[in-house]
Image 1 (cartoon, rainbow, N blue to C red):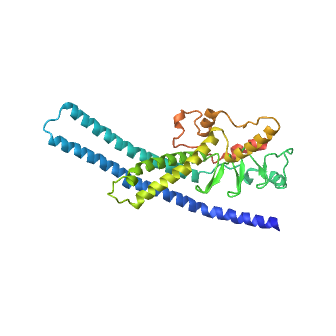
Image 2: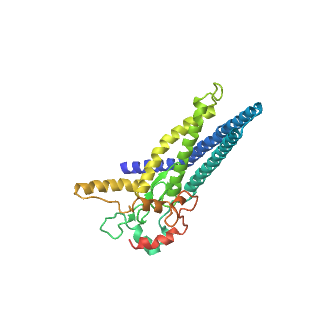
Image 3: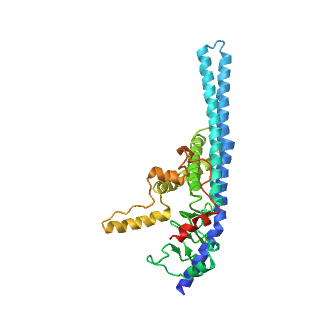
Length: 324
């Protein structure tokens, strides 16, 4: 009776989390669009208007002076050129950051995280044998077996109750992307966090003179104040999440594996041994493997390219499952 109640409660919570996933995505997208709108409609135009005003003042000063020596003229020209390049840089970096955020966020949502072979990948005889298994011991043949799917698991795969499938190199199920973060979309997720963090810090810094200065003559628009508060809050919250995720990438772990490795490390320490993460290849190799730049220059790590998603992954992984 108690077990039945727990199962029903788990089903209700699972259904609830599935339903709120799209709401979280809509809310996150709305916040990003709001910040982008204020940035491109208020903060950047203010930078441009300031540059134009300074240029007009310089021209007026030149007109008032009948004689301007060559050194002053060169200085004014250099100052104008640097100011113009600064404005071009501001707009260019803003467009690049917005594109990178949108690209990596969308790819994290739409790219399947990577699934293990399904029922259709096995013969009828194999399925009958697998479905008959209810409990697994490490000493038995199927030591990598999912009792929920009733199918063998690939190394580093874990079952997601929300997605109702085993996910390759699963890190966690993220409601903000309404998807699992796994082998095929983890790179997009990390880059999304990176670009969003950099963008929030950048917009927050640009909005400081608007909030604490006297640009509006004592009046502060609500949109500017809200943008400052949002970007500051997101920067603080996102910073911790990003650096935690980046630590896991450097050590070639997922969140699930980190918890497992910590438990194994404690057990090994109690036996007077030292436990080592079997997937740790060294920081440099871990980063190259994760960002798919093993055969590319390191600066391609943030390029908007495929993370290795393959629609025929189940067929390609079949041999590794049979070998377990």
